[in-house]
Length: 461
Ligand code: PMP
Image 1: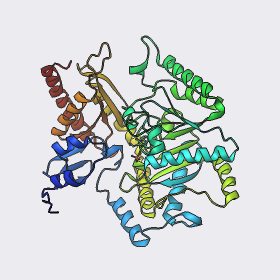
Image 2: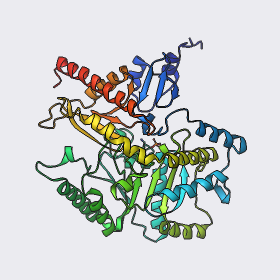
Image 3: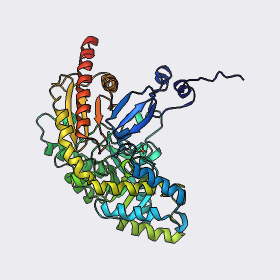
Image 4: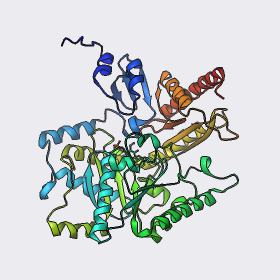
C-alpha cells in the first residue's frame, strides 16, 4: 500500500506518536509544541521562541538544562560501564555510592534503598515491599493501602490505583482491590465555614481513624501520601495535619509511605518534604529531581526494621523475586550521584528557602484579582486557583476550560506553566534566578488580565 509520508515534524508527530496525557483528537487538530533545546531555566521551540520553564518540565529538572557536570558524569559512566545490573549479588560502583549518599540525607531512619526508573514504579515497588513485609510477619490479611483523594502516585496498575484523581481511573478499570481513598487536606476548598485549620486537620484525622476501624486495622497495611500534593493541585497541608494523621497511623500499626517524588531534594525548602512538615516515614519514594530528570531513576527507601523482616523471608526461598532490568542503572546512578553532590555544594534547600518569598509573595500579589480564588505554596512550589465566584467558592463549569486558556496565554508570553483543572502550578527549576521568577510572575499577571477579559466576553463568570 502506498502511503503519503507526512513531511513536517508536526505532521509526522500527529501521524505516528500517541501522546501521554493528551486529548488525542485535539492533538490531531492542533499538533505538537516541539521543544528543541534547553539551556539553564529556558527551553526553545522549533520556531526559535524561548520560554522560561515555570514547571521544571514535569516538576523535575531541578538543575535546569545544560548542566555540564551531569553530562560529563553520564559520559564517563557510559564509557566505563554502560550497563550492569544488581541481580544475584552483582552491582556497579556508582550504585553503591549513590545508596550510601542517599541514605545519608534521607528523612527519618531509612536503612536500605532499592531502585526503579520512575515514580510509578517506585510506588508500585513500595506496595509490593509492604505486602511482602506483612506476609513475612505472617500478617496475611494486613494488605490494604490508604491513599487520598487528589493524591498523585503514578499511572501503573497499583500506583494508578493509589492516585486519587477520577480521570486516572475512568475507563482504565482502576482502582484495583484493596485501595481506599481518604479525604484531601485542602483547607480552602474543604473546610467548613468557621472551621480552624487545626479543627479541619482533626476532622480529617478522625475520618482516617474511622476508615481504618471500619475496614479493620488488621486489614490495613499502609498509607501513602505526598507531603505536599502536586498534580492534585498543589495542596499544602493545614496546621496540625501531619501530626494528627501520624498519630492515627501509629495507633493502628499502619505504615506511612512518603511519596517524595515532587517534594524530594529541596523543593519545599528542606531536603525532603518530610522534614518541612515533621513527617517520620516508614518508607520513602523519590524520583524526578533525584537525577534532575537527566536520566530516569527512582528510589524506594525503607526503615531497617522493614528490611530485616523482608531479608529473613528472602533467605527462606533464596531470592527476593522483584527487580527491573534497570533497577540501579549505572549511568542513572552516576548522574544522580553528581546531582546530589551539586545539591550539597549549592545547599539547594537553602536556595529554595531564600527564593521562596520571591515566588510566593509575587504570586500573592494577585490574590485579590477577581479570577483568583486562592494562592498557595511553600518553598518553590505554588498553585494559583481560579474560581468563578470567590465569595461562594464556586468553580468554573467545566473545570479546566479557563485554566487551560490561562495556561495558553502564559505560553504566548514565554512562560511554560501547567494547569491542573483551574489551578495553575508553579514549580521552576531550583537554580532559577530571582529575575526569572519576576518574569514568570509578570507574564502570569498579563495572562491573567487577558483571561479575565475573555471570561467576561464569554460570560463565563
Ligand atoms: N508521585 C508523585 C508525587 C508524582 O508527582 C508523580 C509524577 N508526577 C509520580 C509519583 C509518578 O511518577 P512517574 O511519572 O515518574 O511515574
